Length: 260
Image 1 (tube, helix red, strand yellow):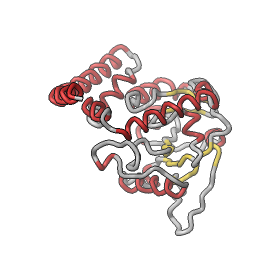
Image 2: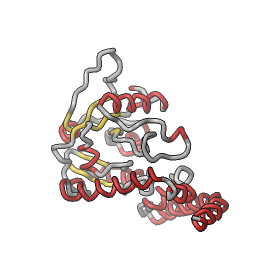
Image 3: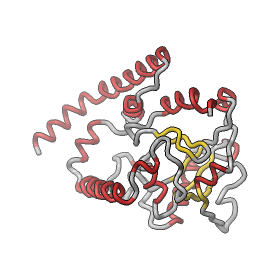
Image 4: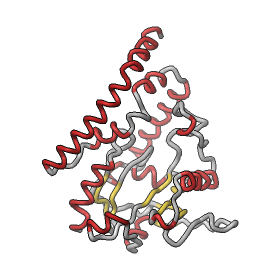
């Protein structure tokens, strides 16, 4: 215990320089990508993006938390179970979008689930949505690529619910684990409100169903980036947070999407 405490003190003292180093490495990686026309490294970019949120001291503090170990072993059990029931290759790059992936529309260009007092919830098929070409022409990407792109957020189960293992800072973990679909939809509403997303932003927001099937299919927890075209998966990002890389997605879109 004393060793861990000493390790935590040392890491905390070095943390600021560690964070700056990760950000500098990401900048170098982006510059190299630009000059060599190579895709930015997802792990380097993702680690830099989450360096402030997930610093090394958090990992050490977590070792002292019973909730963390419960959270960790539950997660490992779920991964083993998924590997048997829903193999990862079902949503690998180049695969077709599974017919069983279902989502609930919350905010689209013409629809907002909470516009009326009575919620009219509809479950739709993700693959059908893509094949029907429900695209949005979005700002600079559409102008640069000359191709309609629909940026979509699918809200899944909480990564760090307030009643499970969570980050220390309240602003990152203030929503409890969803017990029913109303809880999840309310969480989506909070996301929309605190980020000021409206229909005019041309950003579609959907919710996963309570069986978490779409999340499990795409191995999306806690966050993951995909590019879908017609009924095919063109790009599969690394799992977040350490593999969540906007620069890598940007590179892929600008060099590939307008060629489809």
